[in-house]
Image 1 (cartoon, protein in one colour):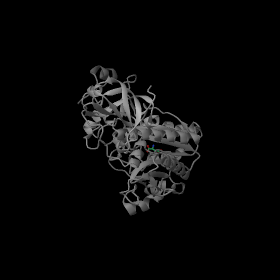
Image 2 (cartoon, protein in one colour):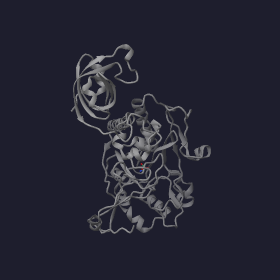
Image 3 (tube, protein in one colour):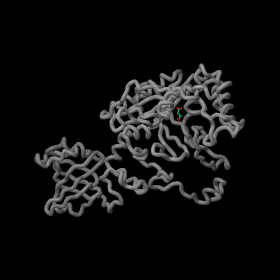
Image 4 (cartoon, rainbow, N blue to C red):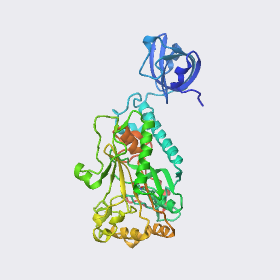
Length: 463
Ligand code: ASP
């Protein structure tokens, strides 16, 4: 493993160092050749003789050289190593690079998406993308430390599973062992995390991958995304909101010190009032929308438990139902509104909370139903057939063995970082995202399987 990252070289003045990296640029002054060497941490200027002439941009290089202070007038304040340069004593060309199809020393916004994703492994070389991935890693590390301190346990849940409705289409995976049957990829770990509460885990979290077959938008990646999934037993709505608020306030202070949060504690906006005032349940309440460093977090609460069902709610009911859950079917009604389930379901408010940041919904959650009778009633109101109800029988059964009151939330990691950094697309904070047309980066999935693979699964395609 290499001993030194480039950003550390200014601490080594007068010493000989060994560096590994990519050649960012070359300036040939006949007898003297300057190279900028780049690694994950930054770039540094190398100075050498004609032997460096055969080196070109993006070659992978090893050098041994002397760290020297630059004369005052040659200091480059734009880079972290601008006060020094390295006199090359020895070098080795480790790997030659042909001319790249895209530049990697710009911010990359000017290049079309298709090309960036085809060559994503090059696109990620740009410092902006490396920074975004680094921040993403720092975010998940911060979350893990914070929640572990608060006695949460990280638990992994299955990816090959049964449908977990979050209002989108499922991705199906055919079973070879039971031909004709399919797994569904989880739209979220919702049911598992509730089952973990029945199991007595009490405080659960997972940096969880979720899969939803829905049309992409600027603030929605195609196919899959990552959530911080949390669930807690013996909590009320305020407990979940306060914990989330503490987590992200502290995270912003530590990892994004240049940003300021507009209001702490975060405002709690009542759904009805917010709809009347802004015409949306995720208002952008920033003081100044041109200020890149302002973060306006807010909670929207007191959502109706149900919306009128529309054609988009294909999953629920079977044409005969009038109601679709506004969050999901496990969300508990406000206790004082329970009688309205029998009379005016659309007037029932849910114990749901949405987390809003600068006009984006960056998370949502709720206190859950833990009374099997109320769960049954909600299934009926959304028009579940007996067959659909049977698919969720395990939840009702689990709840018959002693279930703690519980609730949780699932902030989106991609969404959060995208909103904090004010990036134009979620793809800027995901290493290998799918294109807006649903094609995966570099590998171009989906692809046509071999006919033997289909045969083994007992599947014939018609298109
Ligand atoms: N499962 C929900 C979602 O993915 C979050 C939650 O209710 O905790 O939006």
